[in-house]
Length: 257
Image (tube, rainbow, N blue to C red; front, side, top):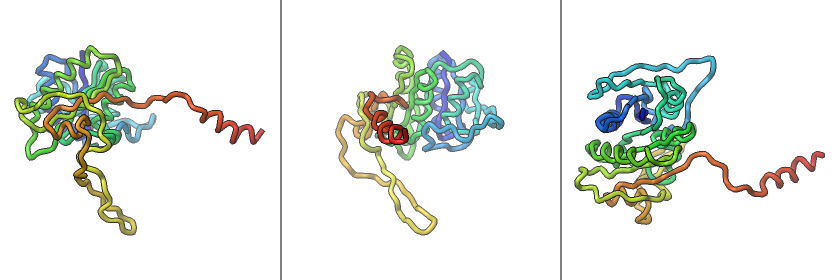
């Protein structure tokens, strides 16, 4: 299986290189396509894309990845996924793995994560996606997250098409990881956005630790306790039908008849 490796931190990010090395070392056919610049927080956005304009692509040689084709793309990670699935970098990948993001992507705020957005875009284009993140620290145990990413890929290859896994790894040596747990999304991640200052024409925003105690089976809490948190998530989908269409019709169309 051909695997696309991408991220939202950019083509030169250490986590991306560690992920690609781990997957290539496991014998997978790896291709890398990631943003030329940091696109953190881009969600599943594709940026400015017009039929009469081209997208800049730069071929890059990544450290320790001789023979692995790698491309820097002038756009967010979701665009990298779409371009790859449409054959922009050769044979389309059958799986997308995004990361390794330095910092957790937990809780409902994953909606805004470019790391997770890439995996959701993969599902939107017919294949499975895995998003991998590691908790913050002075130094990152990339090898730990890489080993967990390989294991997640082994599982997802036999899962249904369009499966999306969000994997969050504690920043520990592999031998110190307490285990792997299925997790539900926490109400929020390890930090929350806040307005530090609001003046005329300017907002100063910052991320603040919440200090809140979360349920033990949520992704944020599990990573904090030394476990790997694995969550299956879905993207855009319709819900069960309601009476909304009939109510709109009654309030607008029948009134104008």
